[in-house]
Image 1 (spheres, rainbow, N blue to C red):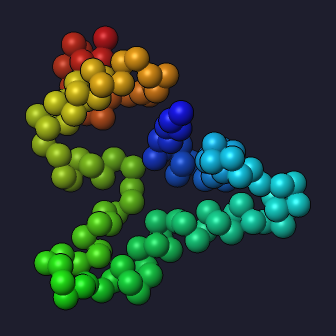
Image 2 (image 1 turned 120 degrees about the vertical axis):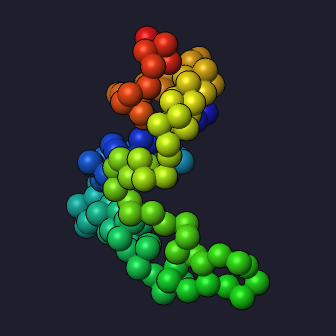
Length: 121
């Protein structure tokens, strides 16, 4: 079984999707945990802001040629536009549609708004 989580949905309502993830993993939160703020606490600990500001993610390892911070972008919806060309985005849209056509995953919009209609008809 696969659980699809959209970044935009997770950013919009982290608690709802955090609870969904816990249920999917077979470890749903109890009513007491929800009342005690456990869900919100976990969402805060796992937030982009918290994780990207951990000391380990600001340093680099001598055995690798990259910094841990290289794995973090701005954490903003739509920031992909700073890394993908229009051609790359259209190709990704097309590839995702092909690969996921039998899944129940739905796209609210193409990644690349200017992608050809043939990819999202």
